[in-house]
Length: 330
Image (cartoon, rainbow, N blue to C red; front, side, top):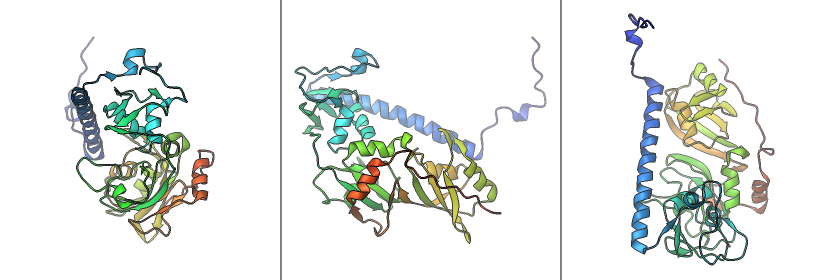
């Protein structure tokens, strides 16, 4: 077969990506490297833990296959069985997704044995411990709405010693609570904290399409072309995303927008605007599910009412009210 004649096309070959495409590739590479570091850290932590306590680790996926999780601990107790990550969530340690990570990192023991499979079945009669402390799935449900300020980490604890959202609700309840979903360090606004694992799972699962509204302040005025491109949906490195609504908060200030979105992807609002070359100077979540920060000052909190809790529990994708998006005028 004859060789293709590439003469004259050299300038189009092996070009470095530029602008937003280059930023996306850099972010993707950083995520890959971070994932590798986390996995290496997990394995190292697992080995250290096993060595320190002198016990073995059981991975039910390795022993029985991907789709079959069996009870492995001797002396199986009677009672209703549930996945280990669900048990931890009901114990008020964190949400199910975070619990799965704790399990994989060898922080959880069941009847004296480290378990690293989130789907491992346990009951309330099993002796489940987190970092040596006994857990109980029976708790009093607590629901707290916080108006998160900047410079607080949305996590239960931070190994770097930074301030967390739990510092703001210290003393509010004797129960162990955790944040539902995440707001990054510089994002402010509505945040729910609870120990209700089932509700937490529901409010963060993509299938329920839980509504979130943010007020976004950009570093410069957004032009009509970029506005309409965002409104129509864009493809980022982790897939396609389209706002449910997009509009200006004030027509006189086109650096401030309101965006409604149900995607729960990491830093999704910031990444949408950054992909068009805008820097997000302020990001404030004004609504999450049916909760707003009305009458709750920044850094303050309040308990949810019974009616609010009831509405949250009955909320699913068939209850989500879709707001017709608005398009900017020229």
